[in-house]
Image (cartoon, rainbow, N blue to C red; front, side, top):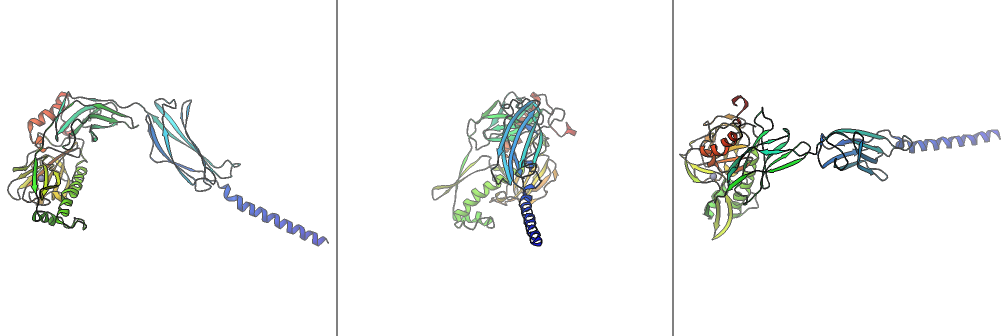
Length: 456
Ligand SMILES: [Zn+2]
């Protein structure tokens, strides 16, 4: 009998151990001890008037239970976000925080953003693993102040202008805004870090009456706009009519056979692709290549006019007519100058070679940056004599004229850009224009020419 009893006890003991084992097997994963991980999408230094901050919280163990974000400044405390996650808990949450420091009673100066998050672990008596992470921030809700140093700026439709101004926060971004176009300014006077300049354009394709403002945006994202006193001289551009025929269109298409998409089959479709799609793509590329620049003015006096007789002008409107119907339009964004065939092409001013290669309708093409977003372009070259990154002097031969790209006779296509926008090059050849529109901006503000520091 005694033996039977002890066997029963043995069975009960084994059952209890099995239950405990199963229980532990079930409970153990719920007791994981890894807290959630917290990261801001971008480093956060400043908080402006209203801020959108992206926060990523993740927990690969038991999943998230809740996230709380608060802002602290001395005794002031504001709740930014309080979010609970339903069972079984989220492995990851991308949270958008809208932070308005002033609405939470915060003042200018240091503050702390506190992120707390817990997972659904059963550890710590079911409270879960908690993470508390603090992010020190600076509250700055005051917009920068920007003020013009110029009396009045005159600008031609399709031409360039220069603004000189101050921004009270030296590290703010700044420039000029013309309609929707944003120009970025420069700080070329090391002794006066708050004094800035910006070249801008009244682009040939912009309507009458665009607003022209100085703009600034500080590190906290606070923005300021200040109207700039600009008088725009309206100018009409010429319109040329070009009669198309198959021979001409086929000749154009033959130059770009490797580029034209195979679904363009007729000679007209091929021509339209070159004249519109490729032109637009090439102009966008030029705009982008012309932008990287030094903060200083590398050119002096004028940009030198290349040799040759004018064959086409900046801003010329072209209508392409086939069977008495206008089938395409384009705008000529430079000056065409024809000299002797394969004549040497010289740098219009001191600059850095930004581009020296084939560029679609512009053929073999060189782009020089002259500093502060001012660039010159030389197209249809038969030979290129410089390479990207070279520094060139005014008058240095950079290539030979030719008829590569969309050119039917040997000539140089010469363009000038400011802030990535094509402007009328003839202004830059004219010492009177330079004196009245660039040098005057410096003299009226009592500033030296913004040459590289060694020359200032
Ligand atoms: Zn041209």
